Length: 106
Image (cartoon, rainbow, N blue to C red; front, top):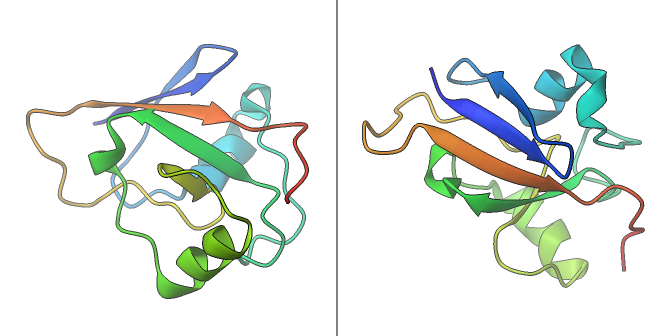
């Protein structure tokens, strides 16, 4: 099972394949991912994959449109849309996400 490390707090959680990042954060409030909509409308739940990004499913067109509109850096994902892939690669078992809490969308 992949391990997701949430920075800056350093919280590490075993995450099941197919799990949505924001749902994981709901179960572990210390992670501290802020959100408002859960539907790729607001961009508040942004996280940055600092390592192991290949453990995430590819972003949907909806997610990509909002990230582009917000002029996000590469590796940025929406916690409400990003899911752990159901086909993990044996060579990668850890995903490091930086929570962008406190930063308002552009």
